[in-house]
Image (cartoon, rainbow, N blue to C red; front, side, top):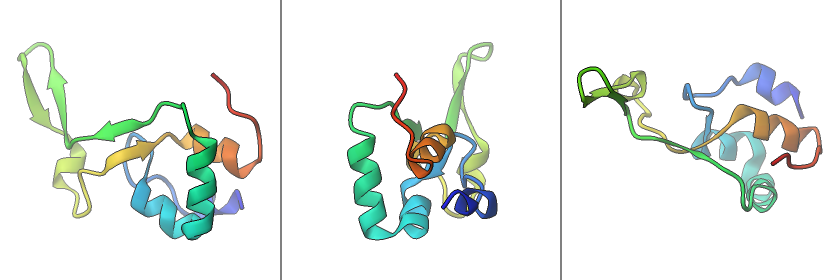
Length: 90
């Protein structure tokens, strides 16, 4: 199962989008992953980032992607731990 990650790197700089994971894991795998992730932190890809020097939001690389911004994003280390059947680390 870990070979999936080697063949499919995250589609967002923050991690794996929900759509990408669903394609990789299937509906049942995605349901199991979501149960495993209960209480864990996820990222939110909004297609922008805050520039503190300019004091404004600027477009991120995801704003220019065909499938971006990605919305909910799961960190690659969490996906890897799930596929390796390791416990959640807080």
